[in-house]
Length: 257
Image 1 (spheres, rainbow, N blue to C red):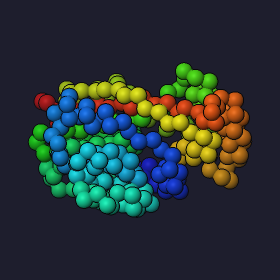
Image 2 (image 1 turned 180 degrees about the vertical axis):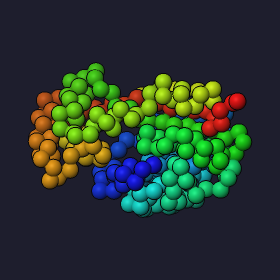
Image 3 (image 1 turned 45 degrees about the vertical axis):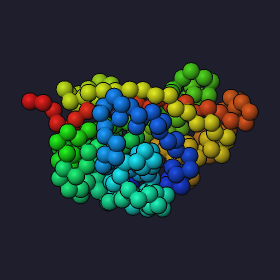
Image 4 (image 1 turned 120 degrees about the horizontal axis):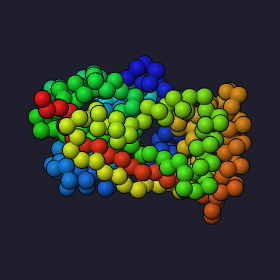
């Protein structure tokens, strides 16, 4: 993680907590039933942010240590998740987690891997995992078309965000995941996911994104006006549907030689 990537969300924590989607419980079922993850396996959530992915695994009975370099996001995760007996957090990065060698059975990174140094992260994951440990990388990938709202939202981002294109190009796809895992990639899956948002929810969801121009930027107010117009044009029953495909890639951190 670069310093820039670890601090991108510092002033977006409130919107991130309130408006970012969770992940389907099918993700955990897939890791258990298809990938052989044991019940109660110890997990490290790398780039855990505000704890959305950590909560998913805690709910399914997995002890989780949230590894997050951004203090504001880690504090939000602690406030939300500290009542879980299996929860802990540390200030660390994907490349230097601070965790002990062979201390976890599962490494997860949700909506975060594209910020990591891929080579250094794989070395660190291999170090902290037990010998048969599993890596699961997952994303909620917003659909870019299929409805007037989805197409309009994508056009809005491309029109008003200065760095949306550069950030979106970092997101992993099947090819880059096959390259990163190599012959250690064992399984992948896709699951439907969605949010229904009123206008305040839609605005909060937009402002939780690191590439959305903030107040004071010349594009901020025109962007919000365009968002309002898009919402009014496409809403049904005072909401719009923000549709995702949750993608999961699972395998070992150790490539065979």
